[in-house]
Length: 242
Image 1: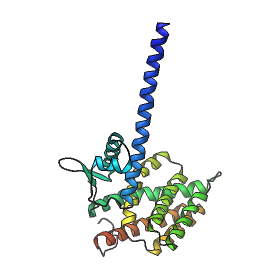
Image 2: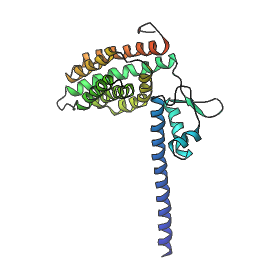
Image 3: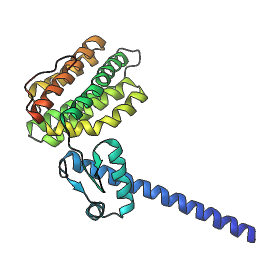
Image 4: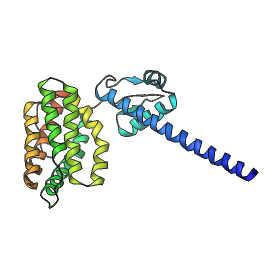
């Protein structure tokens, strides 16, 4: 009997610890999502110092999951450590934008190629989710709801990756998505770039790899030029090897 009691207590303790760890992980994930969203929609503007205690109070959470969330967001590149202590929202400098596009361009091109290839296959995936992103972006643009439009545009590129069916590419893209969403929210969104999304969709839907690649490359390079012009006043368009 004593052995059973001891075993039950040990099991109960282990289960309680596991449950506690899972609960903390869940709270940390919730805190990370909440802080991410506040950065992307600029409630926490670039350069703003985030105080762990204040964020915890705002989110009505304890400081432990908030601390873990802030550390994770430093690793994601949305926050940066201050020299002495604490964190602040990362400022996007010209070199940061350049680096981001240098990584995103080949990923976006390959994602478009794989998506078109998948659609041209014998068991093509559904295009409904991709089409829905375009529709959401158009409705948001018509209603002048910039945040919703940015979210829809980011989702459009994520859905292209999903169509390609390459999990490694999807995981890599996931690391960039929030930085891209932050960048898209800071720049203007010219109408011709929404039209480019429609072109990309049309070529993917037709299963045309080369045209999907060409339209994606044009879109990313135009996006880069628009971002540099919006954020830093750069007049020059993209030039190879810049």
